[in-house]
Amino acid sequence: MTIDIPRVAYTGKIKEITLGRDKNKITIGGESCYPFHLFEGTMPNPPKIAMEVYDSAPEDWPDSAMEPFADVVDDPVAWARKCIDVYGAEMIALQMASTDPNGKNIPADKAAAIAKKVSDKIEVPLIIWGCENVDKDTEVLRSICEICEGRDLIIGPVVEGNYRAIGATAIAYNHTVIASTPIDINLAKQLNILLGNLNVPDDKIIIDPSIGAIGYGLEYTYSVMERIRVAALTQEDERLQYPIILNLAKEVWKIKEVNVSEAEAPLYGHKKSRGVLFEALTAQCMLMAGADVLIMRHPEAIGLVKESIKDLMNS
Image (cartoon, rainbow, N blue to C red; front, side, top):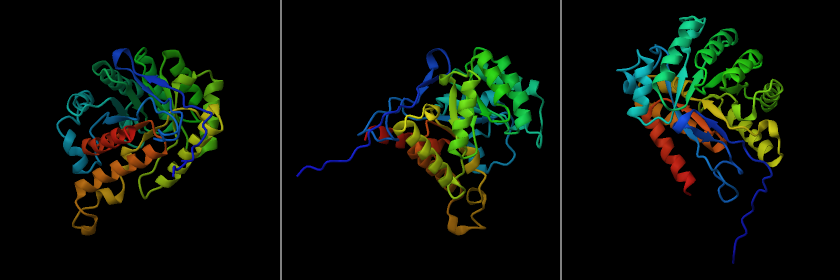
């Protein structure tokens, strides 16, 4: 007796977007089915992982996260090179944390100089992620777009409050924008419409639906991502047919369960393993929801997720 496996009829497709430049370009998107439903459609481009680098030495990382990079955290260029040369990073995500007005508040020209140095010294695609202060990001990201003309950066977060300024600058200097909204499918669609009305090309937009770690709102992100993929693939909603990026590492490594000591919470288990597994499991959940690019931190967590992607693509 044969079993007739029910299959979803997909009428839409996720847009393919090429990131980076020259021989190190990476293509994301292109799915014609739900995540890893390879019995129903195709995923021509497996999900990618970007290793994060900070523009200055982080002050709040646990030792287990700092250990792999302890010798390079004071130099973003050396840090990025180590991620590529030692850990095989296929993309780099430069977190511009020092631009935060509530922190070091470095000026836009200094931030742009750091971004350009990193861009000049690496060959893989480079993501630039602002401090998530709308006004400061507008100033900083526009400066970076200009000074890095021709570098084909991926710039974000671009939000409703600054999409005009950053979007127009990204168009002028040929960069890709990350359209960020707070875990809401309608807001995600609306921002994509606004960027389209601004004449940002379809192949220069990536969706960031925002994210929480396991136990800290991940289920909301998962649900919204599912709805985005359903609308894109079965309802042919063109304004949601974009690849999805998630800046998950900084959300995972700040939670209590990752940072509390073994003496304080012996039942939580080994601290380093705990952090690695929280990051890997959060990433795994997001893969199943439809993530195309994951921004991650710990090399061991990245190794686990890469193996999972390989297994899922070959299943």
